Amino acid sequence: MPLLYTIGKLTVAPALRLAFRPHVEGLEHIPATGGAIFAGNHLSVADELLLGTVVPRHLAFWAKSEYFNGTGLKGGFSKFVLTGLGAIPVERAGGRAALSAFDAAIPVLKAGDLVAVYPEGTRSPDGRLYRGRTGAARLAVAAGVPIIPVGVTGTDKAQPIGTRVPRPGRAKITIRFGKPLDFTGRADDRTSLRAMTDEMMSEIQKLTGQEYVPRYAPRRSEQTPGEAPA
Image (tube, rainbow, N blue to C red; front, side, top):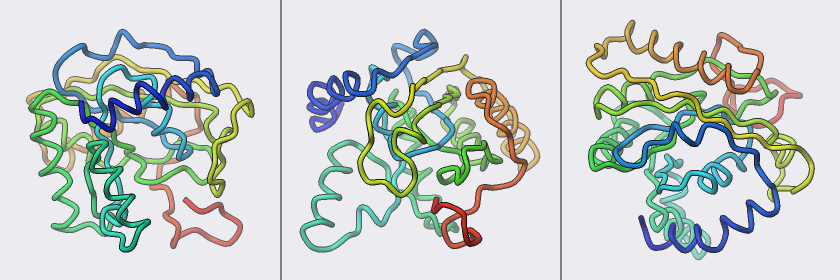
């Protein structure tokens, strides 16, 4: 476990548990050893904080590459923190650059670590669950590890989109872990990846009870006036 992550586990994590008192179900589905992918719905920035708080092992999150490439004091601090936490940079623009995140995540998983991803690709703008992108399934097949579905509720009220600081006591927060999905040996063609992703999103929906939207969530630049930024 990276040193900075360990320090956070001993200091920040207890404070977050005390402040937000998340209700956790399904911890028995988290493997004690070996690699696995945590794939969850995404309602708030607080999702990452609380997921890392309740999972007893190290979680490597995918983070936008911009956070690693900033300049000045703020940019340098951001890079220092994310690198120290073991985060994996990902290019959201797509193409060959985006695949570098997979290249970085595969050895992490094969070495027995855990990686957290959000298949919707961005935070839900309205609390509904949107169609999943196939990256998590592709990564699971390539690394030969299971996917653990994660369902989080209440974080959108504890830290709504657009707010910088979480607000304890605003809502009951629940984090549920589902049974691992084993896609070992499955083909990685487009049809198979879509089928695996749809199965994964169905399991996430069972954990959250969200309304499902069979299209991709709009990114910030794609949202129409009146929609919250993603």
